[in-house]
Length: 228
Image (cartoon, rainbow, N blue to C red; front, side, top):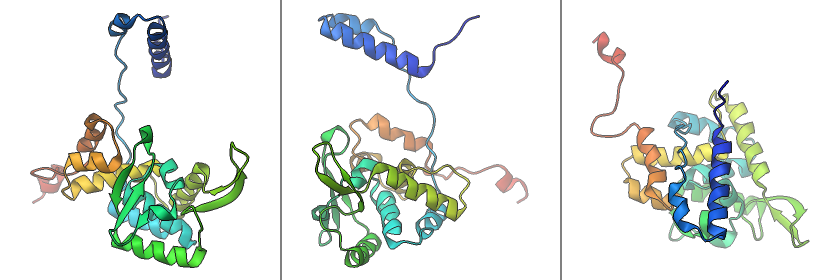
């Protein structure tokens, strides 16, 4: 019986062979390897009413602001955890995202709604260095680290989703997908969205063109006109 290798096995094999060829100086061999298949799954995206339900679900102000920052700025989970108070620029309404994926910095706009929430949260919780504090832990250097953990962020999102009664599976990255899709539907161009997300390649951002309900005419179902 023929067994087709899994995508994970295929990727591991190709990456391993590329590494060996590179170490042995056989650069020309790399072009003979098969191309890695892209993941064709489309991301889960929340509607705007679903986002409103999610943001309103947590009892704690800290958790509501945390969710609003994920969605309103399109951040990756680890980027949110690494935010410092000094990264906020309320006057210019900008957030400095430092050392994102690939070690790249970028600026993203801060909504006036989010600024109001952040100001209220900061006044109430009085964070010192990191914007979002969690349980004190020791980092790799043996120093006490108060940053919120990525696991903690996942818990906040999961709990909010349950409280809001959303049927869709929601992760921190779902809010990033939703951020990009809503911007595209609201008329922002794909290149600007690429920059806001911190994507190295426009091809990564193009997936949202398949998700967003935008274009010259919004897609609709024939059932909408069947009984007109």
